[in-house]
Length: 84
Image 1 (tube, helix red, strand yellow):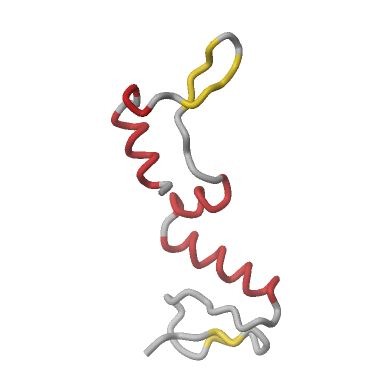
Image 2: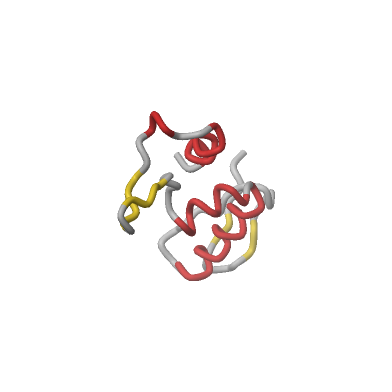
């Protein structure tokens, strides 16, 4: 059984651990509920939502450029995989 939060009433109808469903009403409230839900599940996921995908970079001649994937370290690969 899927939990639903009716955005107009602002009251959950079932479990609190399910993502809120946007029903076309009260977007600002739904957006806040969704951000809290994502943060409660995994802050690394929230970081991607808030800050976009991680792309390792190098600086050459004072210009930041994407680092070639062949030159990524283990940490860079792991962080990139989290942000897919």
